[in-house]
Length: 507
Ligand code: FAD
Image (cartoon, rainbow, N blue to C red; front, side, top):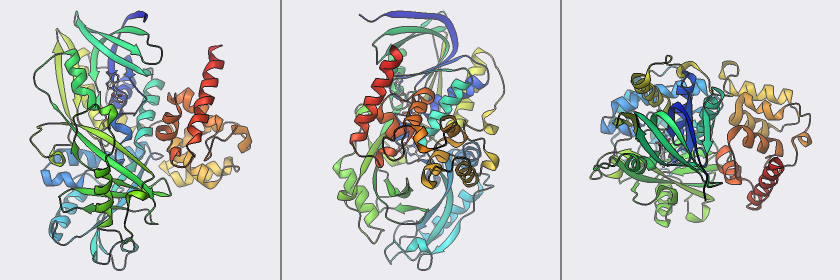
């Protein structure tokens, strides 16, 4: 029989969901001085926020849908996030080949002109035309692609962005709990009694909260309906899948390819030795936790990439695939790729208890979305502090001038036993925080046994103690992407170590 406890001291803000939006809200709220608690039923970023294309982008395609508000805000966010997380975010040049018979050349040029000018671009370089017969970006492409454009957006390690928001929230006093499912919430006397179940121990408890923020992503409507039954369903679930293949090209630019069906796909340099290709757009009706790529989607992505690359991409090349569900706001009658990517915030009061639901949204806009949620929280339970996240680095992102290359060089100078690849990985994943686990180490041996691909005991311990990692999957696929490099047996070895570690701590 599960134990039921109640924490009667009310927190100001209770956040349901540890994706980018939930963790962004928790961080912003904690930094303003609210007491904050966040519950995530799985691992942090285990929902949509680790399954994205990982672009911090305005979304060139959204201009076709006149989504100027979203594009302007997202374009502006690129440079803010790059400045605040120079370890996780990096500028990326996008190569857009012109394809006869699809969008006319002048439309692409006009779109890119707008893209360059509506978003307050300062540091990112502007668009330029490309002669693909001369430029190296043309080399892996079929010879019929002779011209195109190159423009700027950014890349992010999405799962780490989430974790570092959670880390900063916790540093500022928030309680972040994973494997804790919100199983119900009742409005009483203008407050919420939130029911929680620990999915590891099955224990249950209740927490009192003044404001409830439903940041459950693809589960937002389910959570909303369970708390406040209502008729209309606001969320449109759209599945998107990616494949990872051995790298197709040698440079660091990314391709954006138009397809005859109007969709676009990206081919992005990924984790040094791979190319990430995605994404599809399909309506999804199942449980978001069960989402998986189909053979048809793999074929679609391979065919779309093979239309452009000289060397065909085949399903036999796929080393990894992942799927995610976009929680979009809107009308199921609209085609999946045409549904708005903008977020919608719905504010409710259930028997006087404030509830804020977040529908949709992009990784790119999470920080601005959090600011807007905080405005509502201020209006609801009283303002506690001004906007602050625009100018404040995320943990580890505080190195000089945000110069990641200089930081990596300094790290190697301090820790000469690190190979260049390992130093780069530590710098890019943790920024200055890597010194927390590199500590006084004078040799690789000081970091403990290597579980594979440079993943040592010291790093695992850090991920458990400071980043809420609980399983090998958390470590191999979200805190790091070392699952791509380690043999399958590594997961079992890490899980065995984690079990041993937990049992030692329990004694
Ligand atoms: P999620 O990350 O899904 O987080 C919600 C969390 O709530 C989940 O972790 C879930 O476990 C938890 N939860 C649910 N119910 C409960 C409960 N009862 N109790 C406790 N926890 C609960 N955006 C970009 O900016 N750039 C891109 O390149 C991009 N590409 C994308 C590609 C794809 C294929 C997809 C699917 C999305 C993409 N996006 C992109 C959009 C972006 O990934 C999502 O909009 C964003 O991650 C949503 O974040 P979230 O926090 O709202 O949801």
